[in-house]
Image (cartoon, rainbow, N blue to C red; front, side, top):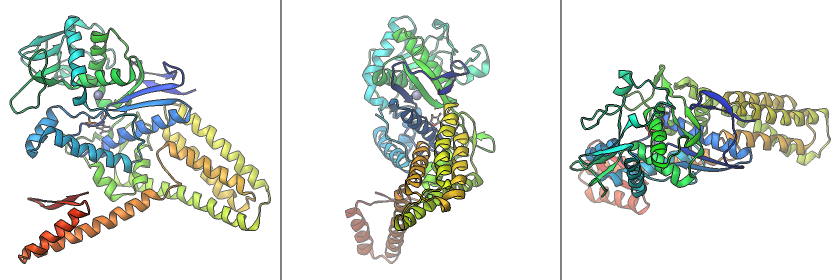
Length: 476
Ligand code: AMP
Ligand code: ZN
């Protein structure tokens, strides 16, 4: 039976979905204001593996990952770049989708955007105010934390502790420093929407309560995100759902991924200690990056360093070599014909054992390192027996088991696509960059006709060249 660690109870619990056979999951997705870092990519990848494992167990999974496309970071960055918040969101949603493809994340059932749900958010805030749990001041609306006696139920936070309050946005209009914004009145230069409190925009926590309810209904089974979201984001979601809809437990299981760390520090934009997912994916085999991101148990920290990625590359190579060995043996047997042997029995046995071992590890709160260890034991068996195996059927079965199990971790061993694709994208990158160098040379020698021709021809092929102060950039 699957057991999951529930942040709400701080215990490993039996996983029993609220509706038979269906699992409803909401994961807090990216704020689309910048290139995601590789820590964000860890969060995306571990929840994709959790979703895949639940599907493997036979559940129909509804999987919602939102895009936060309006908040302070979005507004500040759009102003810095001199573009609209909408254009900024479009740019980084496209970037997320590219990363998602390269990390082999299964498309979500839906990726709703906060700005598509402004009416629903206003409706929830109105309910909270109507129920006496929120108050409006000068166009802002705040949640009155003193009205919710279970505040802290998820984070177990001590609200009398000053350091806790320091993490809540300071604001003179609040009745109590612990209160949080449900709706923020318009400031000059900010996007805004009409509301009963005047023009404004939603507070961040409101969107996830609303979209979770809209797409999954309350209560639903699993809410995921990084550990940084436990307080205040998820704590506030529970408070909102209780105050607006009278549902004190809007989510049955709260799952939080551990941080990707550098020198034991959380990777984050504010600490300036990050590598973007793009940089890492451009420099390493995509499947190896994915393998690395799920190589630790999801709730534990995972250290980011060159050695860890190199190890993932070696691991992947071992898996690919095993598959090649089996395929080579199948080809020989197809020529020479089958003759069953003792090695067949041993490999058939190992195929069963790896499945059981893999399931036992994953049933223990998605213990991916344990699951990988089982896969390695299986690979050792393959390497020991393959040359003596006489039947193609048992070999086909072993390849199919291996690819099914490793597929849950997001590794598609049967497909060469990722490699071919990355090889061809590397080639494309090289060609475009060479053409841009020629264009720069042409401009230096004042051959503007040639420079323009290069840009136009690339444009006809769908490659847009932009000249920035740091030189030309391009995108497809
Ligand atoms: P954001 O775009 O900042 O809203 O973050 C997207 C997701 O990445 C959230 O679930 C965060 O909790 C998660 N996250 C942020 N930093 C890290 C990190 N260093 N390691 C793992 N997950 C992270
Ligand atoms: Zn959220």
